Each structure stands twice: as C-alpha cells, then as structure tokens.
Length: 253
Image 1: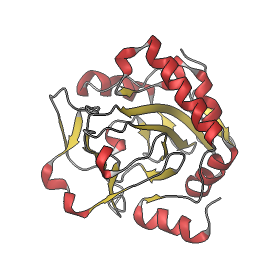
Image 2: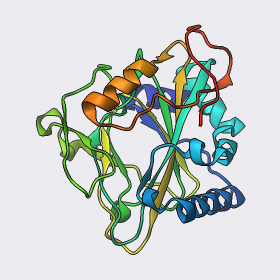
Image 3: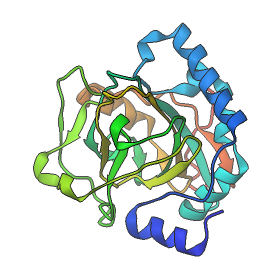
C-alpha cells in the first residue's frame, strides 16, 4: 500500500509512483493477451479504447488486490472500474498522445477518478513515456481543448497551447512492471516513439461511486465531439457499494 508520504504526494502533485511492480509472470500474461488481441484486431495497433469488451481476461489485472488497496487510499473505499485501455507505441513509428486532461473525454459527474498506468515495457523519454505537469490538477477544472485533425495521434482532443507550459513537464520513467497513479485533472501527454524499443502501457480507470457514469452524456459527447462512445461500457464494482445509487452495473458487450 501507499505510505503516508506517497498519499500526500498524490494529493499534492496529482500523481505518484508506488513501491510496487507486477511480477514477470503477470507481465508475460498481459503481453500475451495483448498479442492475441492484436492478432484478431490489428486496427488497435496503437490504441485500444476498451480492452474489457474484447477480452474480459484483462480483469485479472484490474482486480489485483494490491492495486485496489492503493486506489482505495486515494479515492475512497467505494469505487468501480469503468474502463481499461491499451496505449501501445510500436518501435520506430509509435503515435504521440497530445497534451490533455482525461476528464475532457469522460462522462463522469462529478469528475473524480484515479487512473492506474501500467508499464508493460520500460517507459523512457526515448520511447515516449508519459509526461505530466505536477500540481496541474489542483484547481479541479477542465482547461480549454481543441480537436486535432491528424493521423499521428492516439487521441483527438488536445489542450490549447496557452493552457500549459511544456517546460514544466516531468517524465514518468518506469521500468516494466511499475505503475503510476494519476488524477483525472492532471495535464499529461506523451511523445511519439521513434526508438528501436516498443512502449506499451495499460490503463485501469477507477471512479468513486459517489460519482455517476452518465451514459446519456457519453452519447452526447460522442455525437458532438467525435470521441469514443463510452455509453456501452460495463461498470465493475470493485470495492464497497454504489454510494450514488444511480450507477448501472449491467453487463454489456
């Protein structure tokens, strides 16, 4: 679990790298599952927005007790998993992820989540590791974004240039098996991978059940912003109970 200083770091900086890592066997299983997924769905080479709809086996990682313990420390004892995705950056031509805030894409009200980012390979500045602006989550507000019309990006909403200073960015250098936790409002992105080493990252998206996953809002965001339609996501109650009483946990495919 996170110690007191690490919890304070998460609250102050908007992210933390715990003293934790997956075992080599666990990493091998994730890599094998991702290889099987791409064999069936090569269109997800760079970014797969909904792993669980394609292979529920990824829930094994999402249910890791130690990961759930840490998530509960930063968002409370009652929470659900609403999505898992894969950001893969193949060697030589891995796509960049524009600077953004996760909340710009997500139909959660009020906005409150913790993302667990799992380094499936070593993540370095050379192969496009995650970059964050420490403390940028503190005002709990969404900054102005714009649509990116380009083929070299994984996501198509990016922060307006006047909303951040890239010189303040911190590289989250992780060894394979390490994880980071980050807040829904933190500013982050990553560069393209032009190196000879792949950089795969798996994300787990957890929300406190004091918030509501708004499926009508998800459809509206898809229609008006052109983002992925999250309205059909299955929510998995991971710890505690649905404090809002409004979340829909029916299984969806």
